Image (cartoon, rainbow, N blue to C red; front, side, top):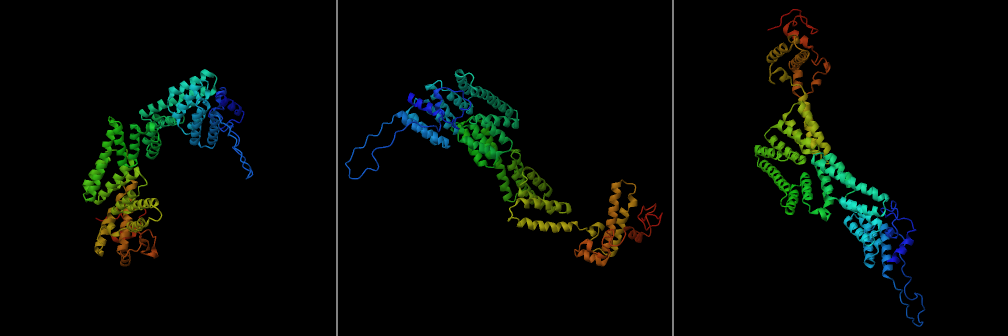
Amino acid sequence: GGGGRAKKARGSTQAAPATDLYESEDSGSGASDSDDDVGGGGGGGSGGGGGSADSDIGEEAVAPAPAPTVSAAEAADELKAEGNALYKAGRYRQAVEKYGEAIALAPDTVSYYGNRAAANFMLKRFRDVVDDCREATKRDPSFLKAYLRGGRALLALGDFEGARLQYQQALLRDPRNDTAISERKLVDLTEQRYRRAAEALAEGKQGRALALAQAAADDAPAFAPLQLIRVQCILESGRAQDAYALTTDLMRDPAVAASSKLLHLRARALYYLDKVDMAIKHLQQALRNDPDNTACAKDIRKFRMLEKKKQAGNEAFGRGRWQQAIDAYTECLGVDPHHKSYNAKVLCNRAAARMKLRQYDAAVADCDATLALDDTYVKAYMRKAQCLSAVGGADNLEEAMRAYESAKRLLPRGDTAEVDRLLRDTKAALKQAKRKDYYKILGVARDANDDQLKKAYRKGALKWHPDRHSGKDESAKKHAEHQFKEVGEAYAVLSDAGKRRRYDAGVDIEDLDNEHAGAGGMHGMDPNDLFSMFFGGGMGGGMGGMGGGTPGAPVPP
């Protein structure tokens, strides 16, 4: 009634409350703008209660004076004041309740609807905001702030046309209202961003679609189709956990919780989080809501096929049917090439099956493919290292060491005992592999006698003597020279009984002859001198620094 408005007009001389969403832009809308008296002075209230608290005992009893009558309008104003205090304290739900009680007592006081709309806006209850603003303008068509706040709530809900109508009503009453003008432009911009985001997504431009959708969502946070675009973009960019979290927020909105599109996207997020069973349950619910949804039906078939093939591989592996397991895992990998985390597990499983068949090169390739999808996969590093160790050779063992070290970095500090042991074993094997095999260089057995050693040396020295390769390219010449020196070094060690004994005992090559260590790698003997001892001369035609030979001497047959 009029009394309530008079009180608010007096209260409007107080400082403007921070809770007014539009007060700083509002050019004034008359007495009915009093809805933003949040935290301002409340309505009157009566004085004290009945009788004196300190009356003397024994005095003649006096009947208490009747309590002053409080009108409904005054009681409502007190409730509004309590709501304002709760609003200022950030207790919006309780404020909504108080404003509701005030409305029940004075249903024609439009400011109460405005205050409750403000509190509901803070709670993101945009539909309730719209309802209260419409109730307010129905009672007072000049209530400008209700049009503004209602327009903002409709924009938040993605009702672009409805928001425009609210701003149009505001501008009919105040054509120069800056807030109405700027907010109406924002409606157009937000709708444009939404439509462009949908177009970009349809064209497969997820990055652009997400940027546009994010910008539009700032002003239309409760517009489900826009949020679903965001979910799809985030999901397709590989951020399944973020997509799932966003679907969880959307599920709290009853208006979209049962949406088959939302359930489908949530199912796909669960699927890419390797929760296939839960994903299938969501798809089944989506189909119950929308039996004709062919996309959901297709994904159910795909998800089930993926699980079926992987399970077949696991069962075959458990029974020791290695090739059957490999075949099943290979089929599983063809179901969905985009499911990186799932395929990483399947590839690693296939590597394990290939290891059983000693297909080490193929197993290493599977481990590398696993790590390309997930570089934190400890088991893949371990299996790769085991395969490389099984193949052997210095290069493979060095790579195995690196794989073990990568696995160790990913393991918890107290859980590295096994990998530490494997590192020690691999290091020892690497040291042994790097040790030259003189028997292999000469091509003789480990029990070769002196005659066999001499024969092998003659053959190797003649084969690799640099003069035989002088007409070849530089790389071939260097290789021949290296091999010539290796043959000489091998013979120098194995033809010396003491050195051979120490070599066979595992003494490091550099320690076989400390007295002459480092003398050209020949343990005190020049390879050309050794050659001259055997052949009595040089290779003829100018040795080019090989020394020790007789110029023009023929190459021995």
